[in-house]
Image (cartoon, rainbow, N blue to C red):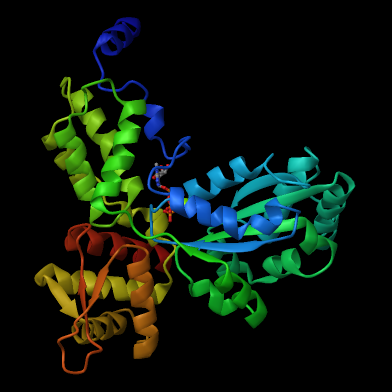
Length: 389
Ligand SMILES: Nc1ncnc2c1ncn2[C@@H]1O[C@H](COP(=O)(O)OP(=O)(O)OP(=O)(O)O)[C@@H](O)[C@H]1O
Ligand SMILES: [Mg+2]
């Protein structure tokens, strides 16, 4: 019985040639619209590439602007291109990791099977550096979502990787973060190094997204299965936020819907349906990283926006005070609240625009385009009550 079901379902046509080309882990050979930024990276890392001098570079940019893809590509391409230096690279994502586990992974790249315990952090690092020295290697360490590391565990690992001496001379760092907030946790010299070698990736425009999605169409879809009109609509939808991940996720979901409906092409209607099911900003892993007061502020915004198209900063402040009272929390100072607001904006959850015509000039207009306010409110309330236990 099941054999027949498999055969029947798999015989049905599909709009896809290779849906894995739309998976989040797939790293394309080409990154259209990031050639210039790739060139900037090459020039920022030039001292490393041409003689093994250590470099430290920071990449920032909003959700889905290609920070991870660009850095991983750069690491892969840089290996073997060093002049007078043997380069090796390692990509590590810091989210949910400890300094120890990151160092352990770096050691295991060169000494596979190195035991989990036994030596302290300092010794692990010495081991790594000794190995690099012995083999005449320079390591390009890519630390993705480095802000999680610094905000959770402090800046010690960054310091020990970049202090002077053998360690610093053998290891270059490419750090990635959505925003620059974590820089406040660093000492002045380290912060200055980051700011002096900083690459900000701007959000993609609609035209750029179309180009990126067109390249992905070639790899992932059967010829003719994704008409230009549908592709343009996906780019338009993702261009609100300049987010390539969203565009790609929309193509995948819409393609699966087309298959499920037995349609041989992906229609605009499939994209609209995919869009409705996709609120990337509401992904639990994004919301669950918010601090308690960021969540309270978001709840206040969602409540206010359920009744209005947009809120001013003053209206948000009042809603926030009400929410705090409800939750038995003391509202944070206004300037701290504005910082939380900036973070919610950087994460792409809220839109914040200055209201320049306003007499005091400091007011902002807060809005929400990515999801219905009611959905957001429910999700935030669920998280808050989970945290209360
Ligand atoms: N220029 C590009 N060309 C082709 N694909 C791209 C490009 N930029 C981004 N992508 C694709 O878009 C998706 C999101 O990119 P990426 O993961 O690099 O974003 P990010 O900036 O790291 O986002 P986040 O802050 O959420 O980690 C990935 O699937 C990536 O392959
Ligand atoms: Mg990333």
